[in-house]
Image (cartoon, rainbow over all chains, first blue to last red; front, side, top):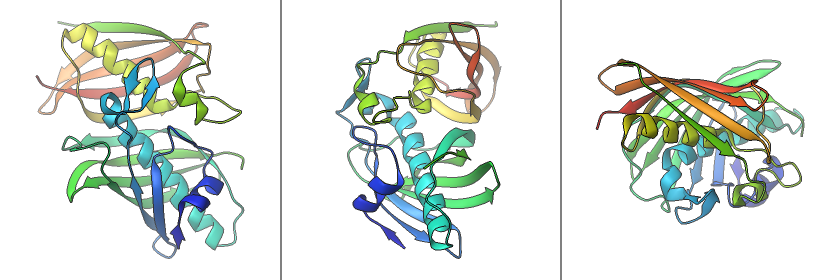
Length: 145
Length: 107
């Protein structure tokens, strides 16, 4: 299932300047997906900090948004209701290579590991130009749509 | 030597990020708490801190515009990846907003 920007805006509450995912695709049977994101390096987000100065943090944010889309996509295609997720945390994250350019596309591969009544976890791997930038796990909690 | 660094941040409601996180319900993105921890770690190390690894990060409660958040990062062991820090973020009332074990790269 392909998720375009219009659908992303329906599935996620995030908006500019912090909506980082541009598109995604979900493989329902495999409970996995891939998203494309850009980090907006010149955009000031908080207290003078720009995307360039928050690269690793925004990689994590993009991974979390991607997990939300994959979880939402899997739920929607299996007849579930549209649901939002709240970020609970990260586990075992390793930052490998520095992001070459925040404004160039990052590919984010997501694999759902566990889905429970309250919380779900997924592993992520972020690459840019084929090089791994970061990988780890995201933990989210079900919220309200 | 056991070192720690502390940073306090006023969460300015006018910050651009709140326009998108989220409209009509502004909440500080949890990942920005990690940035504040890096500032505290930089302060204790006396050099910029590059995040190498997150062993474990948990967000306990949302941080809202107008609040004040303090993060204390205490230096721990050193491994091949770098220096480990135990970080705790607290609101003004002392309640825990987040906690983490982070590893910062060697210089």
